[in-house]
Length: 109
Image (tube, rainbow, N blue to C red):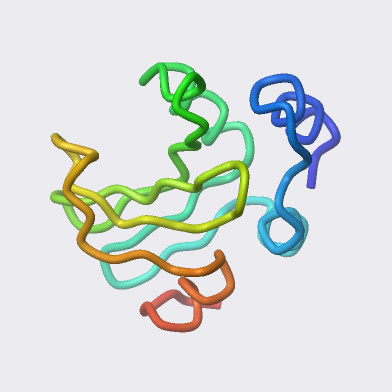
């Protein structure tokens, strides 16, 4: 995981990067994709999170699923949510961690 991402995460959310998410970023520096889903690289996560002003909500925008859903990571506990791309309040699924999400969805490892 790039130290710049770790520094950004701590300064933005006031907590360290969740351990499993840090491991994901270290193992997949260019992100991960498969069957219509994509989890992004650190730089893209920073840009998307800041563009959508999600910092104040304690949420990182971490990727997309098809054209309808996006992946959000809750900073304080590392849970991953698949939500409607237009209404983040509509949760289609949630996962305990990024590794659970990857394990249950069709990603190319």
